[in-house]
Image 1: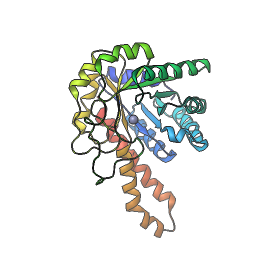
Image 2: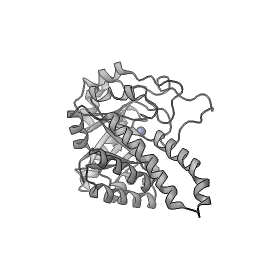
Image 3: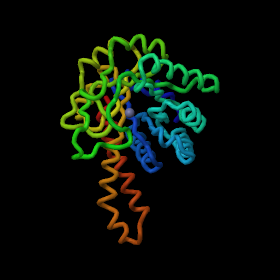
Image 4: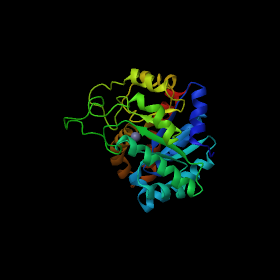
Length: 291
Ligand SMILES: [Zn+2]
């Protein structure tokens, strides 16, 4: 069913839970995620990458996800992830996205604020005042769409490369941007972690006491479950997953393709394995973050 992203997250936090958000490059994965959420009786968030939203087919995917979300028996939101291009943002919202991460985190502080305000203004002017805005403060290392090569060397570990969120800026940033959720950099990275992830719980705690809006943890793939389970206590109400979902789906396809090719080019059967892999991951994640 249609539900505001901030309401899905807010009600989860009240129960001591967080809501997982999954990047969907395709409809098969989205069906799996929504199926897992329905079986768990929990709300969920479908993420669309900005590179997806920048294409005509990507906008059609957003419209399809909108239909899927509205038909679901649990609350589902469709969010455009990490966007800074106004044209892509307004097109994605027109196609059916009901939330946007207006990401100016790579910009200087004042320009980051200006970007979020500009997005809000543009959406309001188009009659989309109900679109929920997430903003990001602090730099996240890594590539959202690609994991780091396993042996490429020199991968960022999070703490040394990404700029941690400066908790002293949080109150001012939230007040001036009007952001409804805040993505933070506390040692989390996009893609694969080099060695053990070292989340800075001290920094997260510092941020959590300075704002009442829900916090968002990106790059959760690779962070141990018992660590992630602590997040809702620090007001982290949304946790983004991408890499682990892709890892599982690709491993499944690799293992199953030959047999399904031999079985009369059985694409339908192969897609069922894709669905099962994504659904199992989504179900495990929903369970891990739920109280
Ligand atoms: Zn992200």
